[in-house]
Length: 83
Image (cartoon, rainbow, N blue to C red; front, side, top):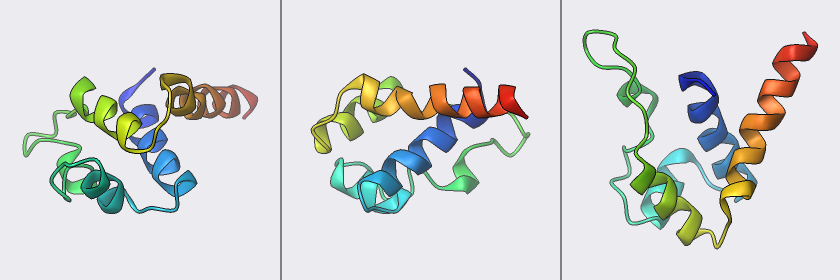
């Protein structure tokens, strides 16, 4: 599991629930900019990872399980191996 896969999973998870990343953050009680692309790297180009608390909040807000979220990482990993 890598940085790109986690962020991509958030994007796909939001889309599955008919939301933008900003909409998913708001529904979860987070700042609407929490999942912005601009926040995924520090000004020194160090990757920033979403917190487990943020992941937990999006799961609770969408009444989802960890498997519902992590399936996007598994599917992405599978696609990458196929290429």
